[in-house]
Image (cartoon, rainbow, N blue to C red; front, side, top):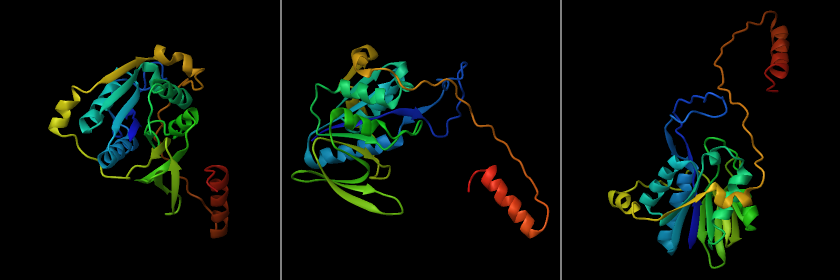
Length: 256
């Protein structure tokens, strides 16, 4: 199978975030890492390649620093990479991201496209399904199991309340992968050395600009939540306190 894995570079989970001077995005002096669900998508692609043969290609859209994500994937066993290079890819809307990826692979013929379920920064969980719509392919979401069949793939999906769903899907298709579908591997020393010689195709925003359309997302200002603590003592009888508590939960906290 020929598999494409969409990957994203995100700020590290424990990295202290500071806003830029305009307050529109975080400062660049922060540590970055591979988006965790995308790492599981890559691992699943490599396992399918080991079982059935084929090729694994990785793609990312982001600034020059995002190439580190691709290098790590190549070191783990991916065959080649595509990098859509531009700072604006860090903040454009999911539709534009999906359109950019679709444009970057329009000359290729993939059997499967894998993405992580969602990104750890925005968490929209939209790029994968939007890409499926643009390609005109069937898709499956929240995938925790993949088996190849004679007619396509048999998938295991995670539903709510501990329930699962099995479904069959033809090829080509797009799948969004849930974290924990497998156990992640580490890059070997020889893999790291081999990654240096694997091809990384670079494409600029200008190469795909005519396919993007209007960006539907504009970040005007970001705010870091302010930590605060407030204790209020309710006075009265048990019945009065209960009534006051329900009123506050309903009208102030809005949790009931």
